[in-house]
Image (cartoon, rainbow, N blue to C red; front, side):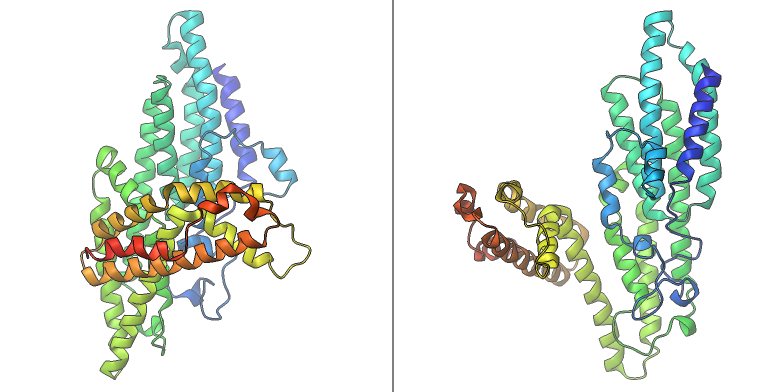
Length: 404
């Protein structure tokens, strides 16, 4: 069984390797000049997967698929599908968990001795360790590493709830390796900011700098609160320190770039534009965290509005979104307020982010109501009578803005 399972996992890993979509290289760092990497803003030639290097986007959905069945490699390959490594990582470990749980329970029931399981799985564990020792040293995707840390944590919780301890030691070792690599890559981002060549990074423009956009998207994409909690429980508690150093490094770099402008007015304008862009990115990420389904629905309708052939949604498609929004919109605004209070110390910054979130959410909700009106028969449903007037969002935000 040791040999059979070892060969099984080795073959699965080999097949999964053909499905991997590479996201980042050693040059894809926050402070690296974009011309040297191909990643770009403002007219430069973009990387094929450049947007995924610093912005999480839809990759976060992998955390909603923790319990989904493992991928079938030949089916995905036939469909020419490619995945970021964290998707393959989850699939591999889902296969491991299912196989290990079954074998562990069998060993206990049939042999009456659970330790036999570890003799059987010594080979598969060795295959997996060998695989990760090859993959991790070449992984420069900090967001992917973050997602894998979250996946391992979720898998540990699954095994704990099932009261099956056979993977405890293995998952602890994988978790330790992921944290080590994650903090190493964060350190590379930090060094890229500290060692940024001002002459190369300089752009004769007071508009937001692409380095600041990289940083804003990156920090907004990191699930900092969850990561810090996991690090405090299982790591060395150094993540907070690294993130604080990143913030200081980006501040120092921006000030150096601002000083390249000869006029004080231009220096101030440059700094204001960059910090304003950061608050806008954080505001959008905050809304996506709480109203992701509604935002995606509205944007999909906006993009299809001009297409007469686009398939129109039915009232039954709309009703779950309305029900979900109505059941928790006030609670979500309260959570955003609490997030802003704990994250930002400056009162003006807090007000700015909450105000921007209010304006954007109002816009989304207004467009959501307009979409509903265009859906034939949708306003005959009883749920539409529950949709409140748009100004109610302002009144709810105002409650919290008064306290800042």
